[in-house]
Length: 290
Image (cartoon, rainbow, N blue to C red):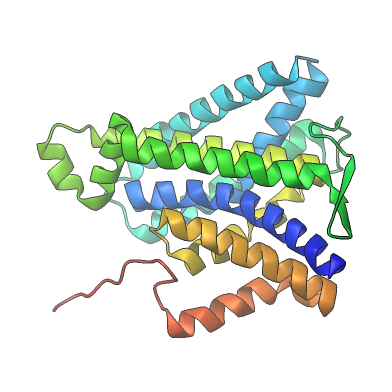
């Protein structure tokens, strides 16, 4: 029982980080229709940005995080303005190839400045352990769950209550109708990329703190794709459920079966669910009439 509880905490914390990364993916897809294959690299850039501000330039942690968020916003806006906006009207495969190239460029830039080995970073969250129901696990894993829950709640309130959040939802539902209401669709596109970069930065910082800051963060970022497909490409609640399902399945398979099989377990689970729910657990079913 204690091992089960420990693996559950680890799985939920991994799933919470995946939900943060997948949230950015869904924001971009809902608002712009672009499938962003560079979302895993956003995790990497986010972790290295805060590392550079906190360790290299020795800024206070809070200031380092604030600067990291500002950098993520600028990066997201620049990518949308300079790379994606000129591709409006081009074929979907062209946009996909550009995001794949963007992923390679972001990873290469990170390796150019920081190398390929893991960098040493002081603990951002407490490393003490706590006991619960006979199980022992690090406190930082609990804090990761709490921080991710707070961030996801704030994003939800932003979408439901704020003027810009409602505008993003309007653009996601119908761009032409949003234009007639005076909503700047191009501004919403830029905002979607900026928020996606911010959510990935938070996820990357948390992931780097509980594991390591290295280029291997992009491997974890690949799990974003089964998360968003499982939850539904256009569903924000689906990212949370998909993240938890993928995070828990990986931990359970690794602990109770085979660690090697845990690498492909999320994809096997994805295939099994899609056989029953082709649009994901929370995806919107589309019916096209010819």
